[in-house]
Length: 285
Image 1 (tube, rainbow, N blue to C red):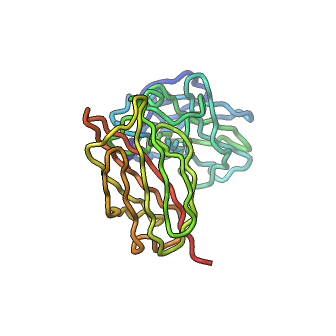
Image 2 (tube, rainbow, N blue to C red; image 1 turned 180 degrees about the vertical axis):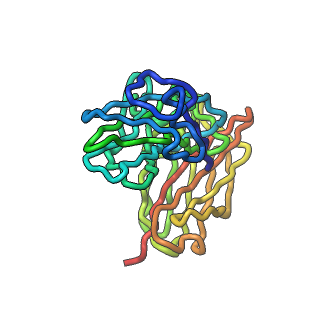
Image 3 (cartoon, helix red, strand yellow; image 1 turned 120 degrees about the vertical axis):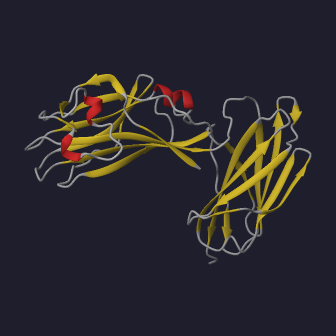
């Protein structure tokens, strides 16, 4: 996994906040390291008003997992003030949670797993058209905001717009086997969770087809992200025509929580796709 950070570089569709220290509002919130009281936007309005900011074009590729918009604000000890991050995707404006700015400067992150404009997974075209911003409301004094930026969390090397591949994934374990729906990373869809116990072998199987029938991959690489964020490789990876299997040994399924299996597949036309299967591990009753 990787992250690309994008910071305001131009005025957006709305400029309603007041500013201190910069020629334009976006210049008051674009710094990499917070300059706190030197440049910031604020409002004396007791109703929410907002700024929106444009962003530079992204430079990454891969399947987008989520975006997170960060705002750094302060209330300087006064009461009744509110702040919330906002994004504009297509024509849809969406807010994060409403927060109370504290006395010292504090940075909050608000996460969007999917694009609110269509409910689908984020695409890089969505990111390139995205505007981010902040909405502020005054109380006994004005709230200040000195930073607004977005982090795009993504998985390397994934093509998400190349068509018709489909897959059927399954978990076959020592306890309760359960079919799962495969989510192509960056392509939306749902993943179910099968119950397994600490110390189980977890075997995962993936069958690949397109509109014309079976698709045989050239290579398959797998990584497992454990609940404690450690990354390990499963064993026994095998490709048999369009069926790929691998298993997670008992030495890996040693803690409770959600495990994420990322499976990177390369095809003969150099297309790379990634699928993900989530499975839960819990202590035996």
